[in-house]
Image (cartoon, rainbow, N blue to C red; front, side, top):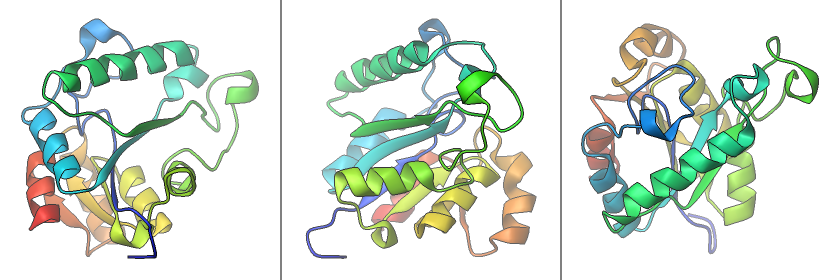
Length: 189
């Protein structure tokens, strides 16, 4: 690990830490997948920063605004506080290259599979990407993590099963785990 740099586990949000619901933005619809608060607490207790990186194209499409994304992330923090843990930072991409309108309709470098959110977090938090992990349920998560220089883990929750063949074809050495709890056990082993 680089001088003074930290290790992080980057987590996709929808389908990785919470039940996949298309364009989730309402607090009332949020539901952790089983074992998530404990998994996050284990990572933090082991010295990892835990950072959520999430594509939120519902903003670009006009389904909800960035205030709704921020409010949902605040709600997640409140739920985690009950379990004596928290997320160290949240990053979201509100853009989409072909859907939506105005400033949100762009081909950006923050939308996963691009590594922009991970690179920004590394700069802002002093993270050694080579000593860090990206965990998600979609091809774009694995692509973003690999491009950023992280070790990537595909979880079989959310869209994981659907994305597994494409991930295996393009990133054959990617570790596959049943869920985040299993990914955390692998990371800490």
